[in-house]
Length: 362
Figure 1 (cartoon, one colour):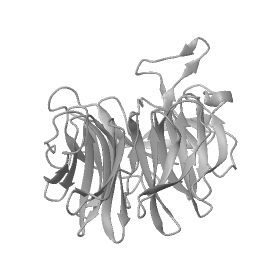
Figure 2 (cartoon, rainbow, N blue to C red):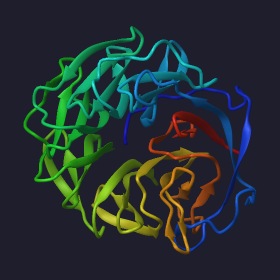
Figure 3 (cartoon, rainbow, N blue to C red):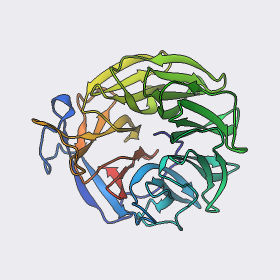
């Protein structure tokens, strides 16, 4: 998942805290220590909020952050087809759930439209929708062209106007003008397989997007030109997760694949910078923590007799992308992490069963 976020501006001690231990990862990214051991670093859990479902279940599929009326909020997409906002200082709900989708909300991206915070959400119902978060209402939808679930969204600015990129099971990635909810140009991607993930970045002052398909390499696309400018090749098998950030002043992509690797790419050259072994990630976020670029991956623990697939055996790994630390760290806690995001202030938002938690590095 990818999104434009704004400063969270929330004091770390604004809520009752609980310590989440961090310890070094061993070979293959598996935990070298046991829960409760610590390498001296820690992630403090500022809050962990249960999300009450409206119907079905309230499982969190996607999360982003923004600023609403001067306070930082998390915007959450859930399995019960609703969009929620949580106060980043307390974890408490902000207003009633936003309804309109008819199936699970799979992707969330946030940006500004005419000076007001908006969210773009995608769903298994085959639609992408735009929400005015201040007015708590839907202001547009982009649905007539889709056939099947819409998996992900990312937001950026093109020629001074806010735009969104969406990805669908129909093998397309599309570019939308958020002011009109109309598609810009032809398909960015028209593939024979699902497009699972999209992440935006700036390259030489121009907006680009990285797309991940069920089959084939990741594509790097110039949004102004509406065409690919490169491919990221090297993974052996499917890549379901991609995120972008900046390393040494240059835009990079972080990807996780079924080949049990996390890879880092220079988007200017489309060359791989490094590859690190890990269990297969099903979610990735990237950003700055304490001024250093990191990636966060979610995966199953891999034990001696193979991976565990129940909800209690998932792990968050935090990877230092500067190369000054040789391995990731493992954040200990009850995190399933189908959804996660790093805010510009370095806070980590992560799903926790049918809920959401906010963590701060200490």
